[in-house]
Length: 294
Length: 303
Image 1 (tube, one colour):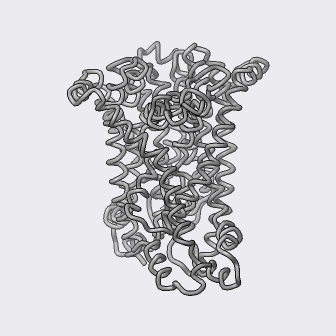
Image 2: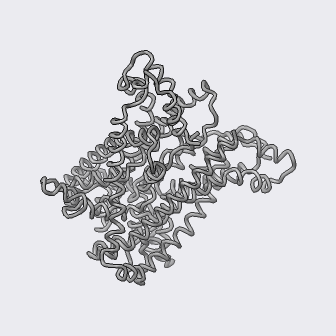
C-alpha cells in the first residue's frame, strides 16, 4: 500500500489542536498542488499535447500519408533494427555485470560500478564523436577500414555502436542494487542442494530479478529508439538509409515540412507513453516482490 | 573453483566468466573509444588547442551552456522539490498519472521534445503568445535554451527527493510541533536538512545532464553565434566543417566537465547513502532495494 496514503490517513485521524502545526492549512496545500501542477503543465503536458495537435493539423489523411512515406518507413525499420541489436547486447552485459558485482566481493568493485555509469555523464554528441574519431576517415582505424572496404561511420554499424554506448548502463544499474539487496543465500542453498550453475541461475536468480530486468529493458529500449545526439553525429543523414526516426523528424522539420515532422514525432511520443505505462507496471511488480520478501 | 587473489572466496560460480564479459564489453564499447579521444588530443598542437577552446564564440557558448544549465537545475531544484512534496504528502485525484508523467523527459526522444517546445514557446505558440506582447521572446533565443534544459532535467530532483521524503519519519515533525515550532520553522529546520543531500544530488544530476544536452536545445535555441549556441552544437558544427581537431578539443573540455560532475555526484551519493544507511540501521527498517544507486533514471522502490 502506498505510504503517502497511510500518511494521509494518519494525518486525518490525528487532527487535533496541534494539527495547525503538523499539516499545512488547506488553502496552502491547494496552492502548492496548483503551483506544482502548473509547472508540470507548462513544461510537460502542453508540449506533449502540442505534438499530437500539430501532427493532425493538416488532417488525418495527410497524417497517414506522411507515415506511409517510404523514407519514414525506412526510418522506422532502422530504428527497430538498432533497438533489436542494442537491447539484447546490453541485457547480456547487464546480467553478467550484475552477477559479478552484486554477488562477489573483489578489489576495484566501486571503480567498476562507477565506470559502468560513465556513459550517462558523457554528452550524447561526444558519445557519437568518439566513434567518428576511431572509425571515421581520419580516425585511428579509418585507413585500414577504407582499405578493406568496411564502412562503420555514416552507416548502420556506427549507429548501432553509438546506441550501444548511450544505452550501456540501463540494465546493469537496475539489476545491481536489486541483486545486492537479495543477497547470496538463495543461490548458495541451490548449490548445496546440488543445482548446476545454469539451474541455479535459471531457477533462482532469474525469477528473483525478472521485474527489475524488464524495467531495465524498458528504459534501455526507450533510449535506444529515441537517441538523437549521438546517432546524429555518426549517421551522415542519408535519407532512407541512415536515418532513424528521431533523425527523420529533424530532417522533415528543417525542410519546413512541420506537419510531417510532427506526424513522425507523434509516433515516438506514443512509444514514450507506452514506455511510461509499462514502466509503471514493472515498478508495481517490483514493489510487490520487495514487500513479499519481507 | 579457482580463487582469485583479489577477491573474497565465495561458494557461487561464474565470477571469472561474468567479470570477464563485463570488463571486455566495458572496454570495447566505452573505455577504449573514450581513451582514444584523449589520445587524439595529445596529437594536437598545444597552442592550437588553447586557441580553439578559448575562441570568443566558444567562450560565449560556455557562458550560455553553464549559465542556462545552472539556472535550469535551480528551477528544477525548486519545482522538483515542490512536486516531490505534493506527490508524497497531498493525495489528489490523478496523482499516480502525474507521478508517472514526471518521467516523460526520460522516455521522449529529445528531437521530439525539441520541436514541440519550439512550437509551443514560439511567438505564435500556445505559451509563447502570452509572452510576446510583453516583449519577451522565449523560443529562438537564450531563454529557449533555458526552457529546453529545464524540460530535460525535470525528473532528476523529483526522483531523488521523493524516496527520501517517503521514508521521512513524521514523528520528527510532530516532535518539532510539540516543542512549539511553527510549520515553517519545522520545514526549514527539520525537513529541509534531511532532504538536503538528495536535493543536492538531484541538482547535480540535472546540471550534468543539461551541460551536454543537444537534441532538445538545437530546435528551440535559434543557434545564433555568440548569443544562443551551446557547446555541444559547436562540436557538431566543427565536425560538419571537417574540423576534427577542433571538435576533439571541445569534446575533451566537455569530457573533463562530465568527469568533474561524475565525481561530485558520486561524492554526494556516497554521503547521502551513508546517512540513509545509518538511519536504516537505527530504525531496523527493511531492505534498501533500489535506493540511492539508481537515481538517474527512476525513483527507488518505495516501502
